Length: 483
Image 1 (cartoon, helix red, strand yellow):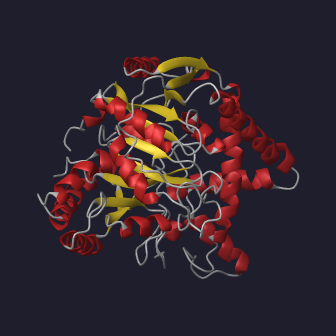
Image 2: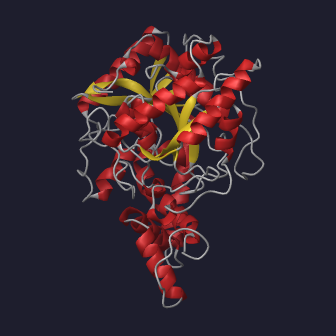
Image 3: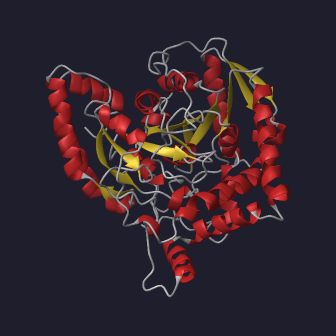
């Protein structure tokens, strides 16, 4: 049962080959048995899962149907879930039980999805390795000595290890696509505003976007269908009709124009990954796609711009965690200033503190124009590059990451080295574009991903290309040994 995809589970439940309750119990037992090796879950919600599974079975017995009805999933632990700990991977929120459900959680629950638990993540989604979590690092099921990527590493590791078929995740600078690449999954960051951010604890509000992590593009289409849509509670949500993402999966790629930016193949890219990307391009050409070299000239400025904007927004968003209303509170504060200092000093880990300090500096009176304003101007240039490119091509293709997953602890002493791993993913967040990573092969036994980018609200096009590619390749079917 644990090897089934979301689509296969939907068919099995519809054909009454098994019940949601039976499947849920099998997967919960698997999590209990195997997750101690991975540390991919922060909270397991067994009682809720059984209750939801029984309810889904009853709905099916009454004639209801739906691809997510009775399907087990997990939520990244920054989606608020009513009455359940929502920690954001931080000591600061270790004791926080959300009083309401995030819109994404509520929508998926209404569709009948079964919540197995909350997955581990980099603290407040700040990191590319899932090593900054207060609950300990998550390990990559392909090699337990390597990172699974971050910040959605818990969701990625759990799905890759076949503990469950799919999970929710979020992407601020590549936090869905990079873990997908590192763990041999398909991960989609939708257009900014396509999925509601209400109840999703914010890191950088103009960059954060929720999306699906699964083994196939077909499964991502199913999960995104349940997540997407306008939400009046979210002022950044866009009122745009949600298409049937599964309906366009079978479309032909004949004549599809794929742009390959020359800037992607620079000295920083592992040549073995470059070779796998070229193999993917050849595969898509066989399916009828037309390849064209393009240029994204301002890509080189994206990382410095991102690492001004994201920390600046984080320093503002995280100011609410002060030890007064909720979250961690220090013992016996002497006065209000001591309460603030010690609660925040004890509650936030080193990476979060680092980004708050950088952000506060960039927003300070003497430096706002020099740093934050300039970074926003670069952001506009990055967007303009994409708009020009999409006048010539339908999608953009390249590597998801410059290197395969590194060893646990290898970049801890040099945060900038970890930041540079986001070079190919952060541009989509700066521009608000949809992006997808899909499996493209292996380097030294570790998975490698190829990234696809499309114009706004063209998630269906990305899923179509990935699905057609997956019909003609088998990288996505490979399973890590021991799982």
